[in-house]
Length: 380
Image (cartoon, rainbow, N blue to C red):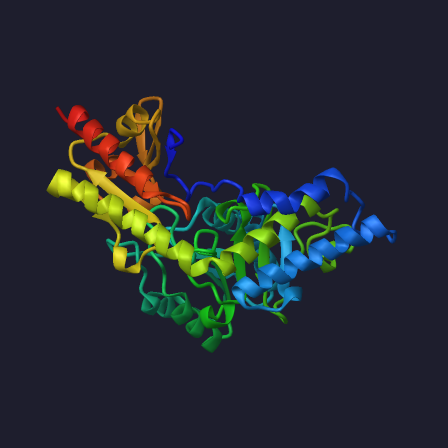
């Protein structure tokens, strides 16, 4: 067993060996510019279109509705700013949630400085929002709703299809950041009723530095960048063929192994929780609702423990993340845990443990042993 055991797959995933193998020819020999007319240029262009089709199959859309970007942050910026600027003549009101990733909230903050008004929908103690609150927040000048599919910290899955139905009934564009959900749970854009959907390659066993944005046909957005006609002019710039090929292959593998991977993530996550509860009892507090949660995600607080002290103490054996940040001796609670109204003590004791598609029983059992021993020592 390799140590330290990696249990922070929501932060990033390793590149799948099949994905790496698919990329090698485009690193070593197939280096032509996709806009060139000669053979190695055409080969790159064909590789891009193959990847576009692979992604489209995973989320059930047409290939020409997929646009490649550098990451989820760019996809979110393209979606939110693009819709806002293209529709500002209709209105300047945007609805989002209080638990979005900074790649959404910071975009909204920027737009608020440009004359747009943002409504942030609150969530309950499990990180779940009520679609009725979104319906209530809609105004005649509402032009966009942007709600994440699943939360990156606690794993809560939002009722996206219900929200999508509300958006369509009111003729409002609907975007979802599906960075954490693609490959883990079903992300059929038609069932979700979304107009735009964000994909992050590095959450999907593809390389960092590649993402995609689904844009439903007929949805008009304004460009963030201007240049030549790559990606039909919506996202100009010479294409990152190597990483695009990787993302396409990652989506193909995710679709092929979907049920198996989902099962393994769920089993390993639940094995970890059951092992911790069996040895620590009520000292374990689960944040969120595991019945409506990503299959790999466990947000948990340990009584009378500092999450930062715990993560540091076990870092040679296990890699996890915390629900708070510590700078210059001051602890800042994440906006997600704040929105869920977790008390300061619980929030500062919260860690996020996220399993992967190949996480083994041996790794989980080792993690249980390490965590229990560390918690017993740190709480003395």
